[in-house]
Length: 387
Image 1: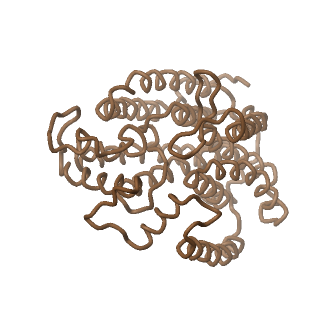
Image 2: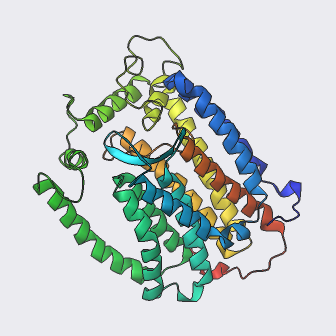
């Protein structure tokens, strides 16, 4: 479980980036909604402590018992849909017992990363076997379906993207990906046609259909549809970002023209916090935010390249994919490039479960980095890894 590590091997660069990002994020949260500052700050401190503890636990030991994490998260997801579920905005996504409220779908992201890393590393010779890929599909499909039933379409799609990208990095043949694309394109096209043509589709909620239809039809007129939360959220978010210009209006400003101050940016401290960054810190602040998140992803990739075994490489790639895709989706939604979804901006959006998951993942990445100078005792499979 624990090994002797050399302190000089610790990735202090990644830790420094995480500290800078967290301080920056907390200042934005305070400006977006000061009522959440103390809770989010406390969550960050606890998450950092957990990250440092996890960083000294052998990730191979964590992989050995990943079934426990996978099982607990799956049970929590079942609980969300039964007796322990807590709803908000038409969706039941929170597991609540007394004062404790968690979002299991966030924990599932890391659970599936560990699952895929363990199974692929243990079955490297069978990677392109249909039976093995079917096994991964079966093990991941059940909890993903539980997330879809909440309903949480955005996280469902994100989980699928993480798994597919990890399998690509692991070295699944282009032939299999080609066949999958040939199947996926007509299926997705048929689904979109069904969603657009049927007024009340049975597979998704009405509000999800409206957002998809609005996006496909290019409903981006200056006349904001105030009857649809998703549409006006994105419309005002784009206006807020544009009004920030180069340097923004400043954090905690009293500008009467501020859309945030006027209450037009819904969920300003959560999914639409990037709109607050754009309005109050301008193009400069937006670029700094993206750059900090890019550096975190880059450090994960560098750690993957230097990892001592195949499992470590896959975990780091999975975490990089997780943060990278989620960042792209969130900013894409806020800037109205993508349909409105409930995906938080990593490290910035309020949410203790999201913070805990991210920092536990960072702790594992730090341990992979620590072990790069430990004597290798596993096959690297370096020639087969598609990085």
